[in-house]
Length: 625
Image (cartoon, rainbow, N blue to C red; front, side):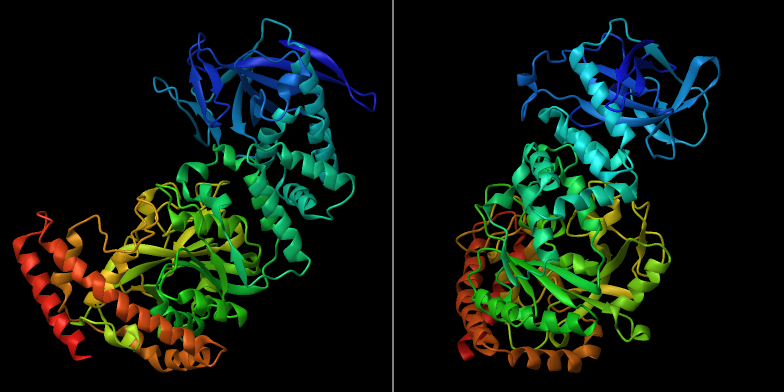
């Protein structure tokens, strides 16, 4: 096995060995430097994956993936320059010169599956396909790799001391630093990682701060990561901002490909997540939501969730036209909510909800003050059972005692109850529940996740989490990458999400005039826009559906909460203007829907007839107002 001697700063000598790893199938272990995916391939594969080990760290091996052309001059390893990929492994010695491998700090052995080329980390025992051989490289490594080996030996020596880790990282070539920063999430112990991440939120002056700033500057998309650390530092110093902005510089968070672990935008994100996990929450439950032109429901929605135990609201909005910006400003000034303007450049394909959720869970420090985060929309309210006095935190505490990090609640779908027009009054008193639905929404431990979809949290650190239903059952396999996790196996009992999916006719049309979050971009000029003609059939077939009104039990408390909010400065006046705009603007949208009926031949004749008849009834009602 090729080896060479390293002399450390303290005079100690360390031997570094360089090998390639051969599987039981006589293929070579391969690491993709961009995706960090392990595979095994034939010997003639162009990419090179080396296994480095050091005498100072028995049982440890670092996979280093490159194209084989290590640079010869320092100029090639500046910011954005040449860089290998890194993955740490644990090595277990076996008879006959063979070894078994685990991901460093992982519990399961690597297995090289025959024919597919896949490597899986899923074995609890060692049989044939879990056996590997380290084969010496044929050529002595060049000076750049030898320098790297010396620098990494220093990192190994100081891996239990955050300041030594920082010093060692600062010595690496700049282009190596982003991937090394990401590797720390697997390499350092959890407590050391948290302490190391805490260095980046410490005082902004001195040698430590300078090294931290230099490391962050090495990242390909360093601005937002540095901003996240800055915001944490400011908040820990007492800063509080009831109104904030997530402008165009954060639009990239609205594209799913930019939030994956292998995205250039994600370099440094795991470190920022570790720093956010350092924050000890002092309060129980926050609600995170996105909204556009839903001001007519806002006061009821806030009052309802205050009643069930929500302590703070983080509301993201964009491109408002209904006057709710004034109402949101009044509520933010009064400390009732934190309002984030999510407007940006609004490029095509952007998902505004994704942008908001990832911004909140990676940038906003205020949300970390809450142990649990609940994601629901303005057409949804959570209804816990009477046994806990309709208080959600009590149920979340019970699930957390059982180990839950995320807790799912299933939908109850509400329909129009024969209403054609909007009218003052609670949705809880106007509409009826007609069915249960397996789709879920989730409350989750805030500081353990780096993003969310509309239905469950997301993480750059883990795919599998301890995920339970509000009833204490396991929520599928807990795999966040499994879309089936969006659905519960059976309707939940201890709490449900009351989804006002179909309100009155004009509210239904208003919903689609705000624009769907369908990848078509933000609807700047509002008009009735839909993608699926089935929306007409959905409304007409459910228009007169009967059902109960389970949320009415909280009506008195909700009305009381609304009266309190209306007493805040400027709120009552803002609410009057929102209602005036709704009644004025919705006229045009309903008429647009009737005209579309004559143009879209995908709509069945009986659905067209029923919809137009309902619009005629609506016209009579509006004329009588």
